[in-house]
Length: 286
Length: 266
Figure 1: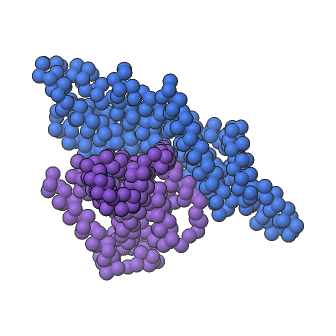
Figure 2: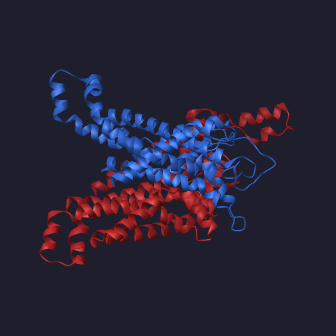
Figure 3: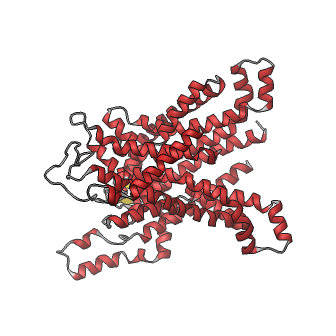
């Protein structure tokens, strides 16, 4: 319980810091406080003055931060200038698509990454090890955007790209971790006593590697979210990655900053959950 | 393995040297248009043909590689220096400074890399001059990429502060900045070098991703990101394998960095 409170407290501090930075980013952006209507040549000087006056309350930095936080606390994420829709509505429309892509990507990445790492280490086959390492290294050297483009050219489902981006990181980390775990004295003793490969893996290798694998699970969520941007943009999947890109191109900072905050919250939650599960394992409480 | 490593380093040296000499090796400027021959096939005049605007692909590849290969290390140097400064100070001072730095690194590491990059890129003017866009893109990578390295350096600096070397230096009367400068930072050099080399391929790939999304280096200046953007117009009907040359060079170069790094990582 104490750990849970500590994690929650840390997360709130990080989010507050993130919110403050986000608000500062919006505030210092070159286009902040400039209304598109000001470009209308039919407007008189008086009208322009009136328009500028309407922005005055936000030009005060303190009131700007207060308004920003009051809005956030009331669940109001602002209004997208570029897409002419409330940010909340845009998120509700696009989040399921991204969750689907990321869920599928993580499942594929983990299945192949952990599966191949386990097979390579437990089967002690250099062919599998070298083959899988080569594949993972090649995938690690290809930008996610290029993979997405290649999938578009091949008319393959774009969602798989997230899996291919996650896979090499999982494979390399899991392989190195399992190699170290397999070399531990108690595992060697178990093998020497004639225990079967599966039994050695489940009872002796996995419990040692599990805490770090859980920590990796949290990190992989962050990797998958980052990969979602190029994948959704190039494969035309209407998720929040595509939304972030559109917001960046049209300089819709309110949308972009809120989007980044929400993604940060999700990755923080994933990391904290992974850490909470891993910590007692490390301490040998489970 | 050693042979692979040597080959990788040799390849990187040859590619870097060729790109540095792009002004002499390239048959044309990266922006020069041969308007009579847009989308030309490979020939003795245009080794990789020309693009939609009639620009020599080979020249653009050389200049693009130069931009990516010169500025990614510059960005890596910037991020490593920031990491040394922030992480080293935090680990050395400890207490509230270390907690603040750890919270900041938590925040940076929780933010998906590309979300952060495009957010900051969106703050900057989109109609900047090509050279400014290069500086902005790589400067941004350098300024935002310090968190992971700072965490490692902070942990290392903390361990170092409890080591015999530092205890002896303290006992000899060394303290404060002198202790940090003379005893802690020199011992952090190996980890700093490793972080520097690890960052280069990461920044090359990040620039490529940004470039393909149209948020990287501005035209007409080429970079690997902008060159790879041409793949968007690829179709099975007018397929030209030469369009994949920048991709093959990028993959080979980044693979060579990984191969060359393996000893460092171990």
